[in-house]
Amino acid sequence: MTHSTAQTPLESRASGPLSGKVRVPGDKSISHRALILGALSVGKTTISGLLEGEDVLNTAKSMQALGAEVERTGPFAWQVKGVGVAGFAQPAAALDFGNSGTGCRLVMGAVAGCPITAVFDGDASLRSRPMRRILDPLELMGAKAAEAKEGGRLPLTLHGARDPVPILYRTPVASAQIKSAVLLAGLAAPGVTTVIEQEASRDHTELMLKHFGAEIVSVHEGSHGRKIALTGQPELHGADVVVPADPSSAAFPIVAALVVEDSDVTFDDVMTNPLRTGLFTTLREMGASIEESEVRGDAGEPMARLRVRASKLRGVEVPPERAPSMIDEYLVLAVAASFAEGTTIMRGLQELRVKESDRLEATAEMLRVNGVKVEIAGDDLIVEGRGHVPGGGLVATHMDHRIAMSALVMGLAADKPVKVDDTAFIATSFPDFIPMMRSLGADFS
Ligand code: S3P
Image (cartoon, rainbow, N blue to C red; front, side, top):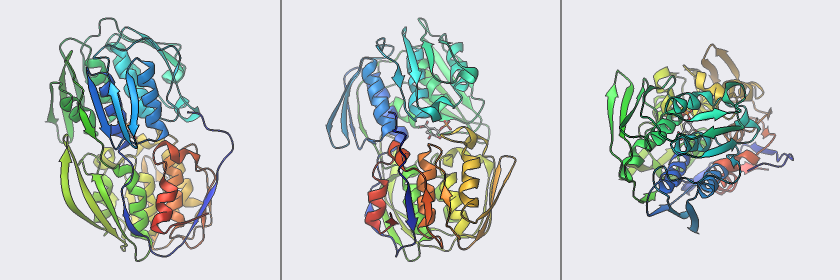
């Protein structure tokens, strides 16, 4: 999905307390995977609570282009009739993933195991992101990337393997996208495909593969890692998937509720998979009041109701090994750290440089233009919290939804309003962010 060039700026300013109860949209990672695994299964998959954001809708379109029947049956309710493992058909046109690295990279894995050729493309942000990290293992499995720009950047043509081979692959960085691409390609290979990661990344692909009938075993490896073994050529059967609320989206109103005085907000059905909750751990260490209740689970994914009350925060040190479990949350954590008393040191953030934007630079810039003292030291981000934020800055979004939402959260408690240059990209992951925040009492105009 391509955005028009006209920007849609917005300003946020201090308001009264935020209050109410909300359910943020469905988890983005799980939504992509439900569509892809539904398409690779035989029979009918039903998905409820799907995130209807642009990123996921692009994945839905790509599944249709590859031969699956994908249909919206009601609000956030979707049905997929799949083609079976290795059953994708040759797409007639290029697959356009818009802004989404996850959609693009996971589908590359699924295509790599099929004897077809597909062109992958995306917007200017996605075209700037490295794809070699995905293409390297997929080429070991027998796929071939052609016309790749330097670093394997999009647009590129991927020739899937006629006879995919199983591999043992050690991921060079903690990345669920790399792991998932290898596993999805491994579905089509005979024998066992193994992925070893030194730091465990989100395990939604593993949990969902099991839910759809694959044989997959995951064991601890070293102090923080995992070894995952998938038996290839399973018959995946359609399944029912309930998508819990996205903790990475909830992160924005949660931090807003913590920093806007006297706020009290409840969030329903937030996914609490421990490989996604590093932000909650960190905020609690900073003194945040986040109460969990109604803990339950669906298809291996735990979820809970969270009640968040405004809290006095203090600076903390966030260890590098926590990064994979909160990789998308550092921007909004930096906002929380700006309102805290004392220094927050976030270590080991090199992967932030290759997200929708260079998030390490963009986060520092967002804080700086709003009067917060911040430093990048190697791969660490150091924020000097002074208990309040001067604000008054104009924040550049860099085609990155999470920068826009973080800056708008900052404005809700800053001394002066904070403006973002473009809110259009919020629609990639959290289409109703602005109305939902307003319903809690946020002052955006
Ligand atoms: C995702 C994995 C993460 C994350 C992204 C979603 C996924 O990327 O940043 O938003 O659903 O697998 P990496 O695997 O590159 O760390």
